[in-house]
Length: 152
Figure 1: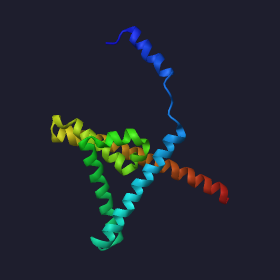
Figure 2: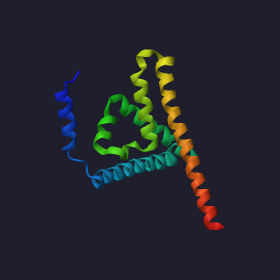
Figure 3: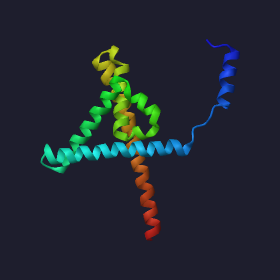
Figure 4: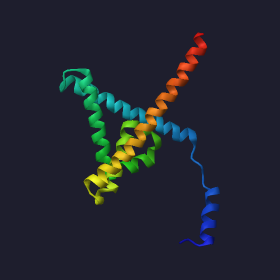
């Protein structure tokens, strides 16, 4: 338990920490996110040319590949290091959600496969999916209202 003096020091030291540059962090996120998208496009083109029959199959296999790569990096502890270095850019939805689910599964593996891993992964994924669906409805409603105002 920290003492009062230690708590005061921690609180006061936060006031003098250098704040990260929003332009630098945003630029890094933009470049890294774009690079991940570039990797995804290269994977799609590779699968489309050499391994599958249709472009849709290539896209599905690219998603599986990115999910596997993100989960593998999380398992080795690399994902967190890369995310700390490059910020939000690596948290592109598919890789970020995979990291979240894999790290949750790893955290609760001692509780067993059903109660620990499956229960907590699905609990976490469910919250993310619900938030995504709700936001999709909100954005669609706003778009519909704006379109109705402009049209009529």
